[in-house]
Amino acid sequence: MKRLINTMLLLLAMTLTTEAQDNDYAEITFKEISYNFGTIKESKGPVTHKFEFTNTGNKPLILTNVTASCGCTRPEYPTKPIKPGKKGTIKVTFSPIGRAGAFKKTVKVKTNGREPRSVLQIQGTIIPAKREKK
Image 1: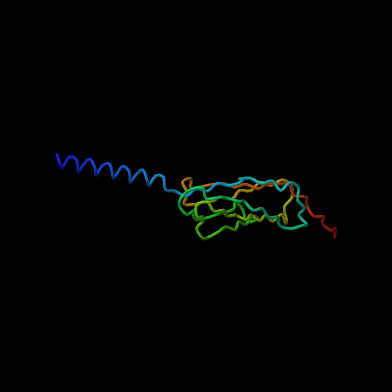
Image 2: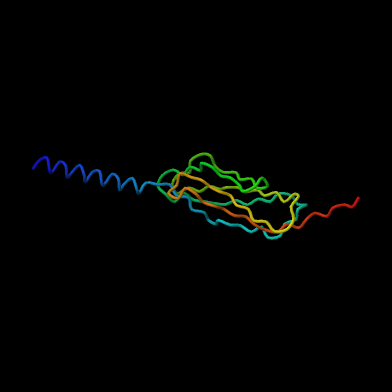
């Protein structure tokens, strides 16, 4: 009888520990996941937007990798853990030089969060610079 009670207590403790671990996670929540620059002029050079996020989980959030879909887009992101409830930003800079017309670019965000992957998007239309005739 004592062995049965000890076994039942052990199983209960293991179940509660597993359940508690399932509730421990980091989670990235963005204020917005897309941004439209509208119409921009190639001659004005690069444009930048900051995507704000909050760690809405209860463990520190780590951004493990942030990559752009092309070389014309450069993301900058925090490399230190973001504490629960704290905010951070991912700065995305787009260079319109040598491009004209509509564009749509993505930035992939990988974290240690419950949902480990997120995708941000920037878009707009580029007015080409006037070229001098030779």
